[in-house]
View (cartoon, one colour):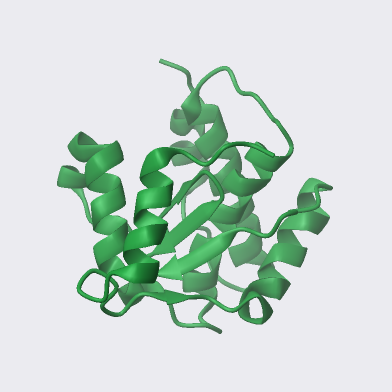
Length: 160
């Protein structure tokens, strides 16, 4: 099994053991996300085992994104992030049963599937493009409009 990065362990420890930092953080029940996991497994032909840990916490998400990609996180508020088997969701964007919110988890689960499957890409844009395509597919299958249109997808699918 792949080693968890030190900063992921630190985030898990903060959420698990430090009440001051864990304010509002919760581990999402596997029962709550099972349909999303199964949807991704069916479309990717990959079993998502072991199951990822999914936490809802704006504060932990902010700490993770500040530590990992501070330039990007300054430009916009992050809704969710995936790193080494852990998905963090901004609590303002997690309402189980809300298709748009669930599509964000699907996007992050696709990144988890990419890691579990040992998939490699020519650049990170292609990794993102696949996750956005799957997110769009999920939204369209549930009667919602796509998150990104084809022109945006085409721009995303270019390695720089």
